Length: 194
Image 1 (cartoon, rainbow, N blue to C red):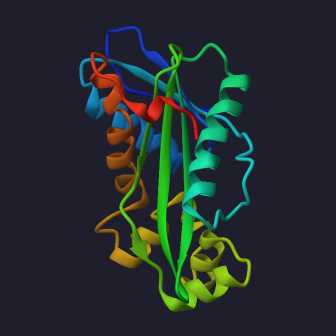
Image 2: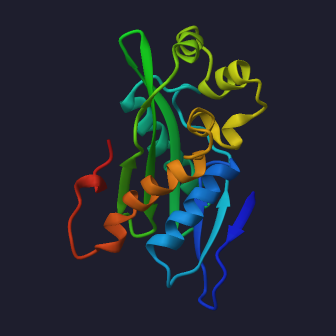
Image 3: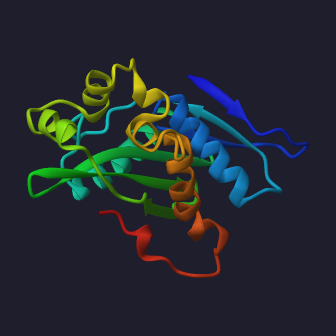
């Protein structure tokens, strides 16, 4: 289990990310720290299954993967304050694919927040490999001559020349998924599981 911590004199809240990918744990730490700047967080990652294919091929499968990751992380680390699932996926659009990710957050009180990242289209060369059964990260590595790009700038970073990195791409969605936790006086229907 890898751990990252926002420094503060406040006792940190424990946040478990359902992934060991440093891009995902880093994005979660940054999102929590930006949304709640007066709080401290100890963010750690755990390896748990998503219960969906390695490359989710629909919006629903991608969201379900994020929710399943929360459940599995909760079972593995039940004493956390928050559990976060980050699941990247693609959705077919004609002969190509759109790429996006779902972020789901659950608190120990049972409150849930969900948000989807922005969507972008993949190059046809990438779409052809995904259509043939290859995972997006592997397709990017093959096409762009990278190694393990999904643990670095990711497809979005490669395609934008790191104007948007995979971390920055996830941070905004983490912040949006935290809206119900910042506005506890309001009711959000995201608390109902899909």
